[in-house]
Image (cartoon, rainbow, N blue to C red):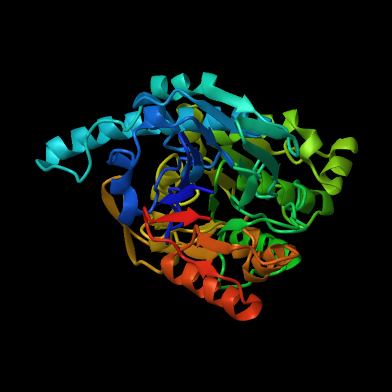
Length: 468
């Protein structure tokens, strides 16, 4: 067997997911993600480690930008192969990539003007990494794959997609490679969801694999029970109402925004919170919420029950889906407490920055973080207790109440990761631990070695391995 596996991203870091498999003359990627940590953003501008035109296909685990965000750049630089993913991911990726390109184009113009005014140069080119036309050029390459149905991507190479339970359409991918009468299976976890989450089904379990590439975002900690998390959300809302401030929620457009709506809908049904106006201030989140309605076959039993009872979390009284910039600006003129859910989840761009400008210096308001904040992001600065932060080129004192609730995470925690690995009947030839901050990945690798006795590696950026 001659199989080479290279870690071109998410190696001792949380974003930029990208893995390369080479076997004979066939080369393909699993994911092609954007780096979002400030420390690693420069990698987004570097040439790809392998000429894009020499790649045969891409297997995409899901649509989050840290897994899909460099696909337009890949296509712009010569890739013409097929991008395989689930049908829901195909729809969502088109929305997210167009939004990403739009933001990059707008940011390039804004930065150029600001740097000219300040008579300085920024660390990155003052042009978009890719344009909306580049994003659109990638769409014809997408090819939807059904969960559980094997796709032949080359002679002797098959890929099968399974439900990861992370976000709508997210996949774990098992690759089977056959050479000279032998075969090997390589299992890519993608991002592993938590069990018993609302809306989506639980992540798929596996009995066998020769090699496993597993994420480790929360590999060093336990997340609180979902019931406790929901109670905290209700408490934050009620406390802020008493303070007569706003609840500002930086949230990822995919899954987290819809999950927050799920809980708010339940609170309103149960009369646990006041009937406030709720704004989804993100055209992308609004569009993705529409995709959820297209795929009820991916919902869990509780969500199906709500839909049958005409109690959809995507259509309750007081919910406002905001698309235009004018509607977004009008939100900040509303008197009284409101809930604003806006992207991006790590405050790296999007409309959330404008709502932070309006609310972060108001002691009555609450900035509520409901997701992971990667090192080097504005969100991480705020949750780490910064007294002053820079937003849109200006500095603002942090006076609002800052709350982080980690239980909403769409990532499995330490024990859930260990349980997922434990479903394998026999140890794999090697486990590769990725998609985590360096210290966390190392910690989780040590746990697996100690508890399970497996051979484990924590790859470095661009490190290569020969799989026998």
